[in-house]
Image (cartoon, helix red, strand yellow):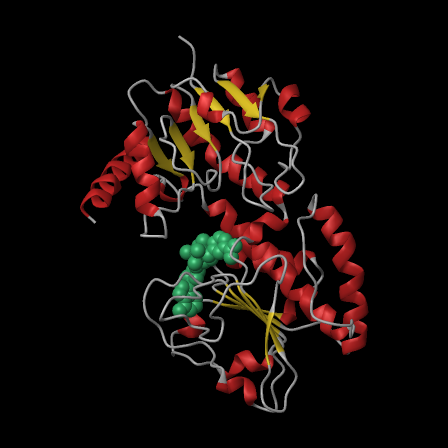
Length: 373
Ligand SMILES: NC(=O)c1ccc[n+]([C@@H]2O[C@H](COP(=O)([O-])OP(=O)(O)OC[C@H]3O[C@@H](n4cnc5c(N)ncnc54)[C@H](O)[C@@H]3O)[C@@H](O)[C@H]2O)c1
């Protein structure tokens, strides 16, 4: 019997170059009997980090961009981000980040499209595996990794006294290119500043936190300048004056319950402050218990920072980008696809795979909620 048919759709969200299925993953799945159709992706603003040719060489069928509505009804439509904005009924089973299970704007409308078409959503954000972390964890590591990069780069920008605000950023083809850019900059900035920056990573034992620390090490920041804080260091309760004594603060915690702030806006007014860059990877910008209360709006690749101007002191640049892994789409996709692959293989199980079974149960629960909300 033929294996499952996966249809990898082209992304439509601007600046999204990641993919849930790499050519390497596809090759392995095809070897197991899967059929894989891949929508051509050539628009520069959404171009997949792997080319159509890469997928063709892996044995995939290349199909027209955006043609998934016409895919055979038994095909799983695989993607990462939003579907094109539309009201048409959804007839297929979709695997992607639907962003509609936590009451987000438009959640009822999206689920209504599934109801109208008889389709289903197996949401990547909510895959739960009894034996390990959910596949989404892969993006956490790369969020911390690229967040630490942006923090260092902003610090360099200020040290090198480059004119104007920190400019827009864009995805790098791979981390080799990124390091070729940042390493000489760190050297120059460090020479100008009289030493390497001190960086405090909060939540250093988590996925984002480990990524942030690994980036700092790979970028050549001396171990003594990397302060790794997690629950043990914050158990006395904030705010923490120690945060004023580092150059860059990278917040990577998972905010599971209300906690006192780590740092307040008033603290930035202190004359003795060293802190000049805050990267809030956690991005709890609208959470009433946000432990960095002044990091209260999201920044973007186009405008990566906003500034706080304390009384009498130098400005503090704040970074709150909520899609950081997109900066290194290839490495992010490789990690994500490798983590997702065992679960994707489970689609072939005739008796049903527990991860997908739970995802389907959740979908039905949310459909009920949407009807009564
Ligand atoms: N900006 C982005 O692009 C992006 C991408 C992915 C994830 N995230 C966000 O990053 C956050 C962290 O995700 P994760 O996967 O790394 O979580 P995680 O659970 O793997 O790690 C969180 C860490 O924070 C620590 N922590 C929690 N409360 C703390 C406290 N009060 N003091 C000190 N340490 C504390 C935990 O002990 C843990 O080590 C989440 O909010 C997630 O949504 C952001």
